[in-house]
Length: 309
Image (cartoon, rainbow, N blue to C red; front, top):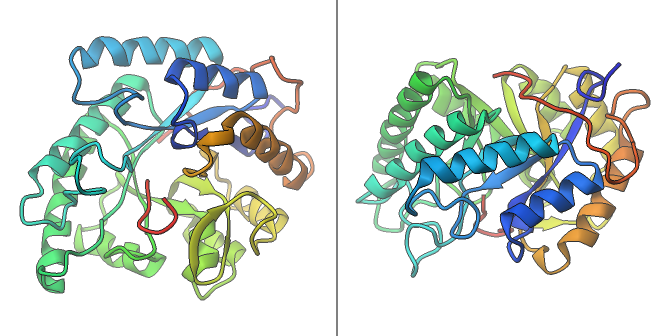
């Protein structure tokens, strides 16, 4: 089997390379042997509001293809939309237009990159917005983004986030039902979040949503504490988790999500890949070719955080 069809494909989030130029970050990850990247659109990493977006996006796509890296698009930049307020505005604010515009731009970028998914989340409910109003705003905003994704042919991965209006799998199911169950509205599952707040064991969480997974983020975490940790620093037993992903037939990227580790990004990325390769089910992880060899990958088909981000 080739690396792409053998099973799990590991990626790394560019929000963990915030101090690197994007070209340099991509090169480091390819040299380490990663099969893809979770690209957070941000000021220095393919800014969706800077001039010449189409040209810059085309250049990034060529770079990804040259390096043999698949890509998903992440939308959790901290201060991209408001230099004073982290993550603002969200879909829940009184004036969500800037967030809706950003997410629709992210969908267009995802289509131009050939991304496997575009990932986004609800946001934290502002204190002055009643829960019912916040919910209605979320449903309306997601409907607009779903329409853009349908038109572009890009799968969406909605991510439950601890502390946000939709923070768990049950909340994602409720939102999907409110939207009418659109085919484009898949799930981004952060493995650490499952340990943080889901009642079920992490492997059971994976099995319960396997048919809806379009994007997986992976990190270690402790029960009740939303802090993204390096593997081995938290409480998750990873071989059963990776086994569950293989069991449900997941073929998207499994991307390391360590947004506060940019100060040591190359070293953390190297340790993370070694850990994941060792934890993956025998015969179900991609090639463990030495650094500098880049298995060819292609899209397999159709965040930042209030605490840990």
